[in-house]
Length: 248
Length: 248
DNA sequence: TAGTGGTCTAGACCACTCC
DNA sequence: GAGTGGTCTAGACCACTAC
Image 1 (cartoon, each protein chain N blue to C red):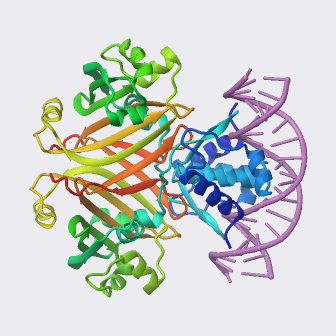
Image 2 (image 1 turned 90 degrees about the vertical axis):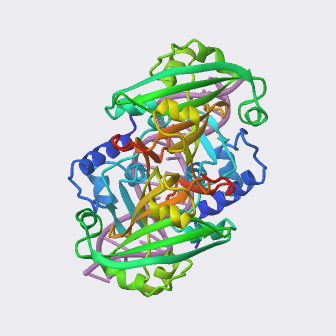
Image 3 (image 1 turned 180 degrees about the horizontal axis):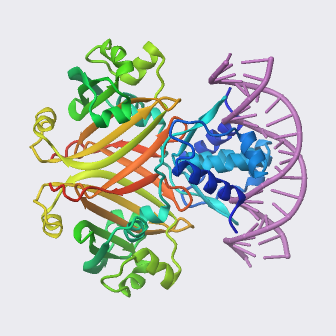
């Protein structure tokens, strides 16, 4: 069952992406859209709110909505899972477990994932045949066994865990910064030691807020870019000061 | 005039940040909140939608909302303006124009900012007394004069432009990646050439969608981190493949 | 001043979770 | 089956923009 406002949003999005509403142009008023789709104004507002969240349109009180762009943000799954992102965008990709071991949780990990044992996995992932990403993931103990059952060249860990134990990754927090490649990073990615990597540290939880994994992902410079569209009314991104003692 | 739902959101946010609703705990139901605040259910839903957008709470149909965390995302102004961000977070900061000149727009810039002349400004910004950010900003020709009138050590360009010509930065698009420091970057930031920098390229427009500026900002590694909180239902971040020919 | 989006209400029905 | 959040309606008033 697809909601009414979703279908309205789909139709409007299609019109925007196909150029029916050029960038910078005005969208029809809520009243006009309500009449066109034979829906209440509230439903139309929900639909355009979807487009606003995707960064496609902007709005302000008293003036008509305007079209801001034609690139929309992706689903949570596509941000969370390298495989789902790569597949949805038509890239050739691969992945391989390099190392995997259980060990006791450190103090920091205990706070984040729960006490006891954790499973640490080192994966190397490639895009268009080139190694681009070193993933160091620490899984909470309660799901270690499920991860260990996966094949070493498992394409999508996210999908495999859903199929095997019904696990849904629902919420994520991501920290993005730049770091110099360490010796292992350099060897795996085929870059010089100290060269720039784009780092994404993430922790993920289930719907219930139960922590699942914590990961340190490093992309080779030039392989991947993160993109955000924001507005005076909606701002998902946070900038934080780091530790200035660190010097490259 | 502050909206009702904003005040409700403020109160609930305060309770979450002060620990009144611990992380992982359930929020009261919409019906309970409606009764407590003597508001319609729709108004309460608007309020919790604000908290969800800030990444503080998560929700799913049929189950109560849960508290996800205690760090909230910042306002657009704080992401857009280094000065406003630094001030809001209690940092000591400074800035200085290093170089500034008018020149004809390149082909790419013409498409992004409009034809004719543009103004290119090179600024160095510091945090806690240390240089951390090199900003190379290109302003559209129509606002070049206003920028040239600013003092070289202007703290907040955003605020100054609002005060002088009423300009409001309303929408932004941001691309985030890692690059090696060039010769000029290295000299200004006091790092080795080739060492990692966190790059944020942004283009900003007015409420009407009129392009204002396009900037290439480079942070010294370790000085600043970007943070995102997302969920299966709301995902503001986009990951894009870069040009793999680039090698560090 | 007319038109537009922003806020708010009151009520209905449905899909889903949890027990 | 009771409770909860998700969807949708119909209508009202207000703040703001554009002219």
